Image 1 (cartoon, one colour):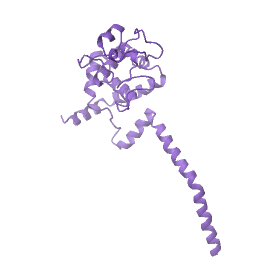
Image 2 (cartoon, helix red, strand yellow):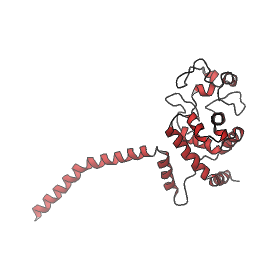
Image 3 (cartoon, one colour):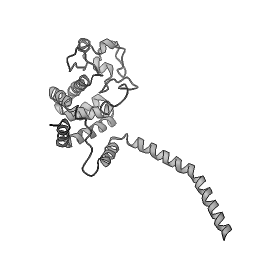
Image 4 (cartoon, helix red, strand yellow):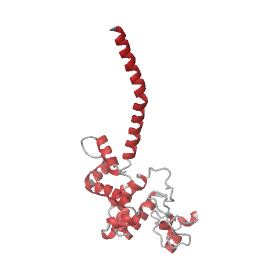
Length: 226
């Protein structure tokens, strides 16, 4: 009997040793899989709602940005929640580092230089990266000359995609001109990025923020201490 028990312990020990690498591999794959799933907006929002608890979904629109969204939205007659949705998708509310995509999109709202400065610039073609001198990229006179959408929102003499206020007002300008000012939200989003998946992702957060307007406003007021 003792010999059988000894053999049984040995079998169990060897089973554990043999299964350990497989268990670790499955665990690592599960972590990687979950990280990839969280890149999907709907899954990301669900995960955040679980973290928030039973009282509702997490309100993740930074309260300090809301006044800028609203000012830009009022000027260009578009919903401020649309700007918040674009900001969320483009740079996760400016938490992306650096604020420069591999394709050349720049700043808080990820403008291609040719869209910001103007497609009539002689260097603009293809995807719109262009070959525009840095000083010209932020020059309102150059932007006006070439028909770009860059805006000097804070009056400092520069229209800079890396300046948050300038970037948001420029995005509002572009979205309005692309149809959002006339209520053509999906059309405007598609103009911003010619991808059906992109449209779906932005619409997800746009509708979410629209459904939570009162809660977002209350959270913003509470945070401001008003």
